[in-house]
Image (tube, rainbow, N blue to C red):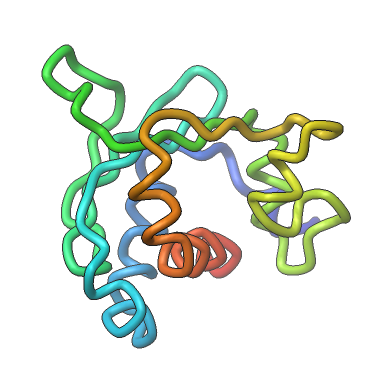
Length: 134
């Protein structure tokens, strides 16, 4: 059975494992030292608010509360798309967020204030690529 076949879902426990892997990374403190902000990671109808300080994930909360709408940007995709993205060698069109968000593919939506998204793109890309190690 593949790694994905044994994964139940992208639940809070899985997101927390990913956050631990991000925080253990030796590259992110260098490339993400100026990455401070909040973004939403959406998986199907579940949204996780991720707070980042100096390139490390400092807080995760499941579901958005009325006072949580101060996030900078959101990345939302179906669980099936995230599952393909997280494979050690993802299939075509799931190898990065740009391929997933391509207008012809439309698996990922990027919403909100894109300025902090662009400013921290390298660190964010590294963070997301670490999902493949969870």
